[in-house]
Image (cartoon, rainbow, N blue to C red; front, side, top):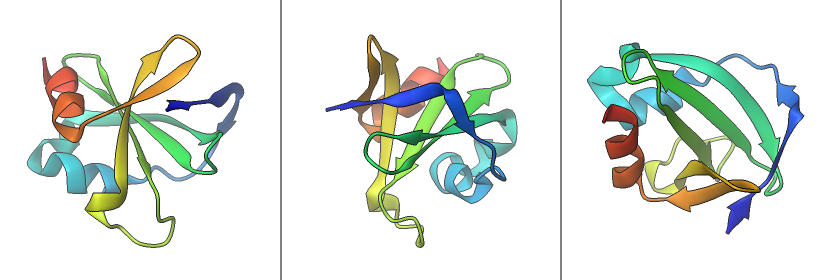
Length: 96
């Protein structure tokens, strides 16, 4: 599946730090919130950038009202949108 966003229409919201903290735990302070976008799947794609590697971890969550780690999805930028990747691959990418 390819997730589509409109880069001309970022969502200006309060950063979802709780989402990042649940994924990155004690490493969460090493990230900065870059932006969030509405997606073609009616979710919000949150982009966080690591301060040292300068790489992104991109996260959506299926349930907008609850933080259920099993419902988190991870994405990498690809031609034409964002391709879904595993949590492990997303963490490896952002830290290497």
